[in-house]
Structure formats: C-alpha cells, structure tokens
Image (tube, rainbow, N blue to C red):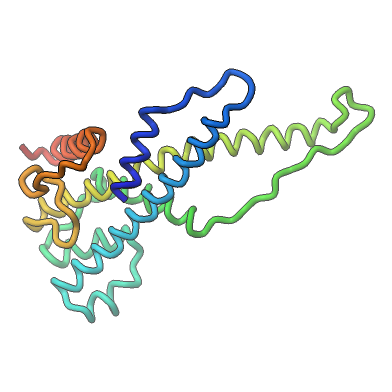
Length: 218
C-alpha cells in the first residue's frame, strides 16, 4: 500500500500536461499507471486494516471472539467496537481516522463490487443539422460528464487510501500505548527508513499534524 501510494504521489508531482487539443500518448499512459497505482493503494490499505483489526481482536480477546462474534461486523464497525473492548475507549467517531476509513471502505467496495453501465450511442436523425437526435446527444454528453466526475471522485478516494492506515495507526497507539499489529508512524517508533521518499515522509508528517490538531496532543 505504501509503495503504490508513494509511486502515485511521484506521478502526481511529475504530471504530464494535458494537451489543449489533440492526443497525448504519454498522458494516457500516465493516467493508466496512476489508475493502477491508486487501485493497489486502496485495496491493499483496506486489506491491511482488515487483517490488523482481526489480529488486534484475536490477540486481546481470543480467537473465538474475533472469529465468531466480531468477524461479521463491517470494517468501520470493527475499528469502532474492538478498541473499545480492548481498552475501554474506541476511535473517535468524528475523528480523521474513522472519517478517512469510511471513504476508504466506499472506494474499496466500488472497486470490488464494480458493475458496468451501458454507454448510450448516438441515434441517427437525417433531419437534424448534426445528423443525430438531440436526445441521444444529450445522453452521451451526460455520460461523458459522469465519467469525468468519476475520475475526480477516484482521485479523492486514492487520497484517502494509505493515509488512512497512518491515521488509524496513530490513533490506535494513542489509545492502547502501541500500534498493535499495524506499522508504527510515530517518530519515536517508526525507526529510520532510508528508502522512504520525501513525498511520503511529508505525507506522514501531515497525518501526524492532523492527528495532533484534532486530538490536542503535543
């Protein structure tokens, strides 16, 4: 998840300009690469948080409780309920961690349970100046706008992928004193990572600042 998100940030920083007219092969190839990286970041972040919360429950509450009683909950509910059972306090419902998690879950579900939609075609009308019916042209234009909106929405989903793991880890550590099965992103416990780019390091720093500002921690 971190690797995919880091590569996505790198492509965002080195975005190939969209041509005013015509067609840019390089831009299309970059779009395809960023889509793949975004999907990887969303899906693997969700997998990490699924595995992490199950492990947290299994370690602290027992395998039977984790498997039989809690595994039927959705991911957002698990991260609300299980820390509460483990330490008496849960992640803040309106905090940045669970807010991001809700967006991440929505993005993951749309990818995993994707359903295609028919794209309308032009209907010929010899009497029309354009040669097509006005209704068919309106339907095609509407579909194109929806595709453009979906692209913008996807970009916002990617922004809520790996950062969600960082925010959840920071809040879990504040609750129980450690990050449990999640990787640590606090300066004190994350150690040195010479392979982490400045883009990712800055992103993690922004998440720390967001966590501090919301929770009022030093």
